[in-house]
Length: 121
Image (cartoon, rainbow, N blue to C red; front, side, top):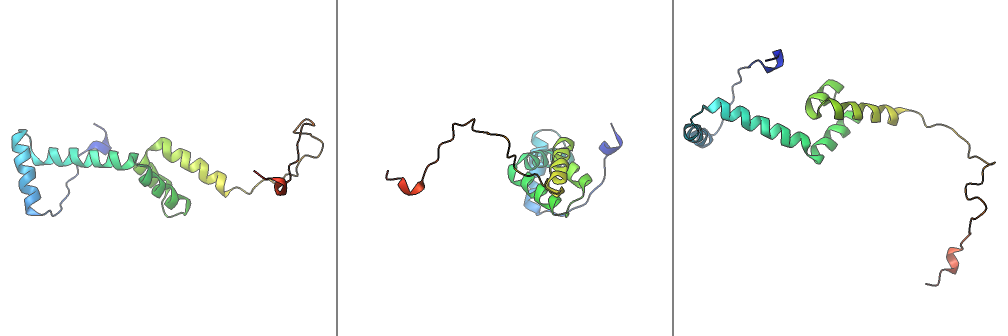
């Protein structure tokens, strides 16, 4: 167990009927409320992090400098966070000021010019 896996006590309030249902399910599976809550939270986080909508929201806020990289890593994982970091750096770069090549015939002489006004179809 790593340090990040060490249990942390949290306290929250919930409607009584949810706690009653949770306790009934825990009793049915012969486990305790905490184990069920931790599993439910884990599943929710995994499903949310995998959703395209969530990842787009994280990306948008990261590109707008409203999320730090470490937070992004926690939300979407290291690999996706690194990809977002590279894309953000690419977006922030100044575009290259390159002139169009004038000595290269990209069509190899086979270019056809079409007049849109002649389109009678």
